[in-house]
Image (cartoon, rainbow, N blue to C red; front, top):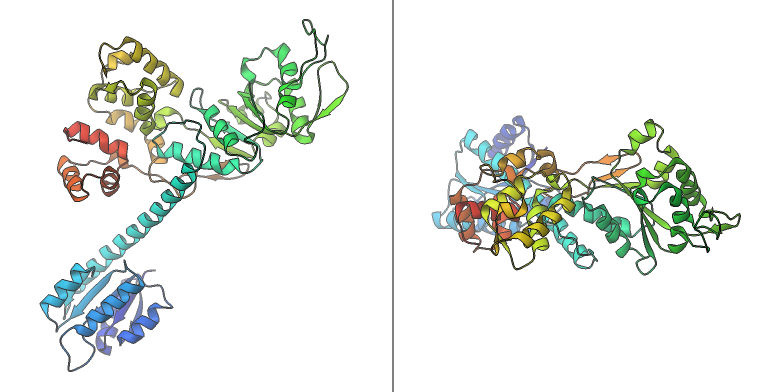
Length: 478
């Protein structure tokens, strides 16, 4: 319930205003002198103040109200204040309104007009507070990222920002992490970031693609083998776990590990112990395991292809990476990174890139960019250079088909999307890219914020990439 403070030396006015506001669902505090108002503000949370301008019977100058207004402003700079009086100088009212008073009304007041003003002012005040909190969180994130090793990752979307935030948070611990997401989306990059920002960053970081190893060599690759353990094993070799001792082991495509390998992997995760193939000597290592998969492990468990106990050992925390078509704001920054500084993109090419579904994710995009750089007839790349069909109209259709992804990736949630063993914490949503912003609104915002793109985008509720696309559409200079 929102709280309104009424400051007026007329008790009857306080009672009338208080009754009207309480009927309309507000909590009301009243006091009759500026001193009492300031004392009350020191101990109470107030959402809006309605203050008189004169508190001495023989004074109509408004000076007392002016002093109270500035005293309140010192205590809470963005507090909505409605000035109300039957006696004051117009110049004083104009001065205070310019100084930040939210509204000015004469006595007697109009109930409907006053209620409407209160509703709007409180809503704007809450929005301003939310934006301030968001700015603080974003500022903290930028500081954290500035000091972090991001391993060359390129991104522009809120969804990817949250994944990186969580990866940096997990890097400080030694828990096992399961990175899930489609092939080619960048799961290995997140593993790189986790290791590079961990206390083990100077220790071994060993990667193995479980899905790429033949079944007959998989066990020897992970745990090592003695000479003669199998045909062709002419000398003893250490496995990936031994090589990663004291550091981090990244097991990619863990869902392809056969059941026999799963049993040994479970044992080494539980105890740190294993034997090389062909040996009875037990070895012990200490390794942090990061794994990744594009498989639905829950379904594999249900169908008997993956051990449930191993799943819970690997999945202390799951880091879910969305596909590229749910991270639209990543596409153009990635393209510019892949093609290099020597090329620019035509507007139709940008639209075609944003419309394409990118089923192969970042890997498909990178290959398309290599093709474009090789086959381009000029320094301005067109859609045909990428092997893409012409865009149909605007890219709004592509955005509509990825609404779920976009709602995950704009106003950064205060908390990242985390999937643990027992809880899912959903990211908050934003639909900025679906907003209909006119040319006139953009021009006005550009003028108001002197062309500072970050401020213009924020004032319009858009991401910077979304603003750039609209400026291109309307032919506005960047």
